[in-house]
Image (tube, rainbow, N blue to C red):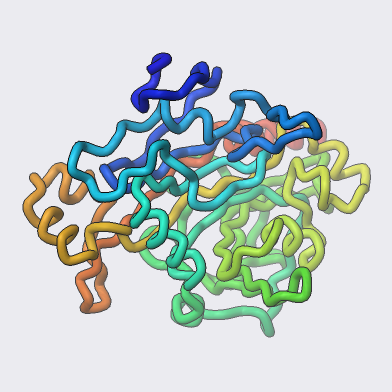
Length: 328
């Protein structure tokens, strides 16, 4: 077993941790570290370009095989979608064929609701014509309820910017970017969460933003923030405008994290799966609040998973704020 849970793989455990946020016999949610690719590519000789340093190679060591009798077990767990190499956060993993099909269909139907948090250089403009209410955002199909008004409520980072100025946020209003990418529609709902002064940032301000993609286009969030709002995500070396401000903020990697996801459970909403779920002991049935019943009258078993932002987000903002106080 080579130190892992899944037998039969002639590989060594990759030298990085892959935290498991949620897991059952059918699928799992893991927290992908920044700087790790989901799958390795092959060179002209058929050799892996990343060796074992991939999420795919780490999954058999991080997850537990489904119990005997589980329908259509996949030989090894497989990610259902991807996160860019520099992006950290929540990744959905299938452990059975039916779960893979169901999760893939949920992505195609845009029923999986994801939340990302990023730090951008500058102050993204909030225009009246692109402002939408919480209800309008929900009608678009993104997840804006519960605690989303304070994505950073468990951390103590002081806002170092006067919100009474011309760049005041719009009292809980959300903003929508509807800007095609690669000749396909692309929609992102977003809003600022905090402003922090920085000597290195565009216009002297870093903005912590919460973003909810309605669509899933290639590099959508990175391109929307740079191309539409002219505010590059800190650490982005591809879409940064090429200015000196961007170069000054590249040292600690990309500040983009997939920190929340909401979806229908891929098995517990089937006839047999619902019977099994109803008979689970409470600690497994509700998974410490990760599983819940929908409030739309259908009583669908939903998965609500979230993680804290990486420590580098908070330390970076605090460091920039402290440097500005000393030298600004």
